[in-house]
Amino acid sequence: MRILVTNDDGIHAPGIALLEEIAHQLSDDVWVCAPSDNQTGAGHSLTLSMPVRLRKHAERRWSVTGTPTDAVSIGLKHVLDTPPDLILSGINAGANLGDDITYSGTVSAAMEGALAGIRSIAMSQVMKQERPAWGDRFAAAREWAPKVIQPLIDAPFEPRTLVSVNFPCLAPEEVQGMRVVRQGFHDYARASVVEGRDPRGQRYYWFGLDAIEHTPDHGTDLEAIADGCVSITPLQLDLTHHSSLAGLAQRFGG
Ligand code: MN
Figure 1 (cartoon, rainbow, N blue to C red):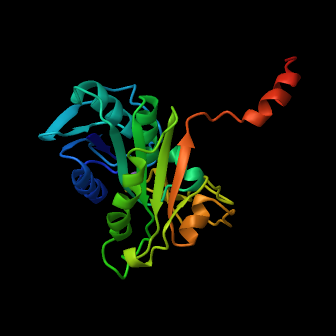
Figure 2: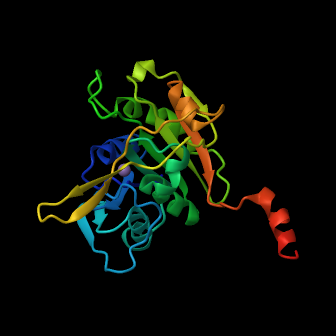
Figure 3: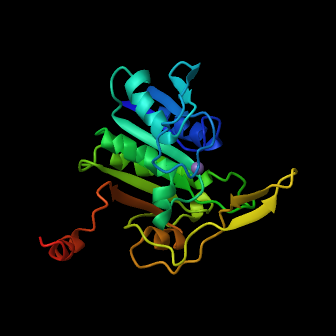
């Protein structure tokens, strides 16, 4: 089984090192093609206004000076001679829950994989700012990711679908199990924006990633994480709101 590992935190992030370790437990044909720098928040963007450079770090280990989508796309077209059987994206340092998904480079890398017809799984480790009592911030992912990936390896994936996984911010032995759940929504989302002045007196704005308030709906990823479970959410690229189609068509004479 050939596995392509990518992420949005960049090739030097600890989460991708862990994901490579986990991939090597599954296969000896593991490739990495990831952004050279942190691309958190890049969503599904492509680099169009400047060239992207591809750099070889080691045998089967490459980075691109672009977004997670660039990395998957260039990985598939210019790094691998035959397509991978599986794309693993992550492990992101931070949650990708609810309506975080469209901002997420981690999930978008897996979307790009799904568009290419490849089984793709995004993985994110929920974190708090302070270091946890159990030390390793990725401890839950380290223990639980193999348990999540194994059943997904031969599970049927519909075309243009992917799976997004979040690990709760708990010591591995405190994790309450795995739940397949739908995407939830935050009550009030959007990062805070801090306004400041740079050393030359120019105003700047900087997005923060505060904990977002929410009352999780039943059966959602947010609820699963709040209950201490690993959340497993199948996602689709079709963003059409199907039940609005007929009503809207009527307004346009359809
Ligand atoms: Mn990230």
